[in-house]
Length: 307
Image (tube, rainbow, N blue to C red; front, side, top):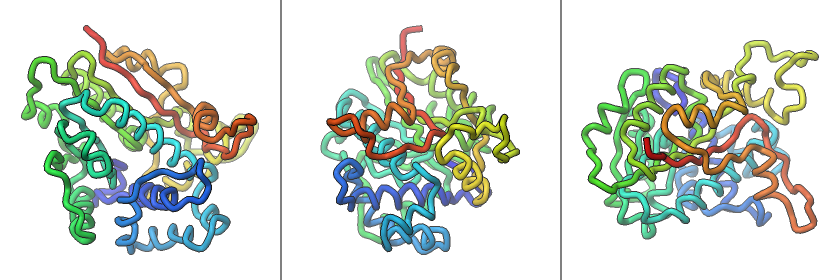
C-alpha cells in the first residue's frame, strides 16, 4: 500500500474506491465496471480528502477537476483488466494473495468463482482494520475463504508470513500487486519480489502495475528536457501523490520489465501500457479512441516458470 504515512492510512486507496464507485454507475458503457462493493463502501467515507473527491456526484466536469487527467479511465481499465484475469483463471489457484489490498472487493464479488481458493488480503494493519470496520458498518461479511493478514512492509518481511502457509505439491498461487510497487522503496520491492519468487511454484502467476522510472524526479518544471514532455496527465499525478504524502518512490524503465521478471523466475504473458489499454477498452468499432489514458503506468501479467 502507499507508505504515506506512518499512520498506515491511504488516501489513494480511498480515491481508487471512489473511482470504481463512479464507474459502477456510469451511463457510458465503455467506462462501466461492476464493483458494487465500492459503491457501498464509498458512502462511508467522510475524510476531507474523500469529500473533496466526491464532487463527482455533481457531474463529470466538476469531477475531472479533482483528479489528474486520464486517471479515471486508467483506474477503470485496470479494474477491467484484472477482473478479466480473475474470471478467466478462476479455480486454477489454490491461494490468491492480494498485496496492498486497500478496498479491493474481488474476494466478495467473485466469491462463487473463487470459493475453492483461499484468498489472503495483505495490507498495513491500520489500513486493513479501517477496511474491516467499514465492511462491518455496511453489514458486508467477508467470505469464509478470505483471511486478512496485516503486514507493515516497512518493518516486516513477507517471507516470514508466507512460511506459515506452506504449499502442497501441485498448488499454484496468484499474486496481485495493484497500485503498490510505486509506493515502496527499491529495496522493499526487491525483498517483496524475492519473497514471492521463492514461495511460488511453477505455474503461479503475478499481476502488477508500475510507473516509469524516468518520472521519479524532483523537478517538475516543463523544460525542454522535462520527463513530462509528451506525457498525458503525468505531471499532475506526480504532484498530486506528493502533495498528499504518498509520493512515488519506485519505477521501472519501459525496456527493463522482461529482464526484471526473469530475475525473479517469471516470464511475461502480457504487458499493457496506456496506449494498449486505450486500444483494448476505449476504442470503438470505427477505430475512434473514446478516452485518453494517463500515461504514467503500465500493467504486467506474468507466469512463474521452471527454474
